[in-house]
Image 1 (tube, rainbow, N blue to C red):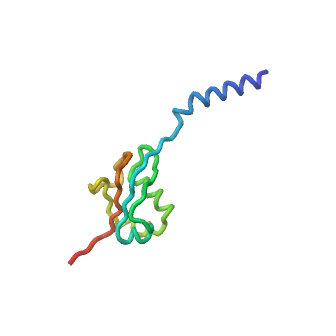
Image 2: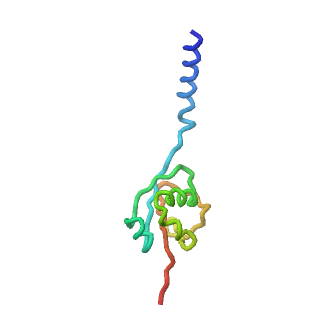
Image 3: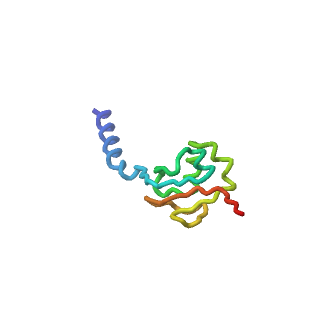
Length: 106
């Protein structure tokens, strides 16, 4: 009897806390140019990140999936919705994140 009661209390707690503990995610669109496009093999892709993720967190996650991008890290610029940003910017659902390699002109 006691074991059943503990199990019921445990299940009740899990059911009540599940919405609080749930990690939400959001979708952003990644845009790749030049070398980045060659490495990933795509011009653009939809990508899912944790809710409240920063650009820094997105980059870390993407570098795990595409380690060939990691050596370019120090030379890449990043834009969110056509504005250059730093790593601390928080991403929102529907944001477009551009990976921009160095550009030279003549």
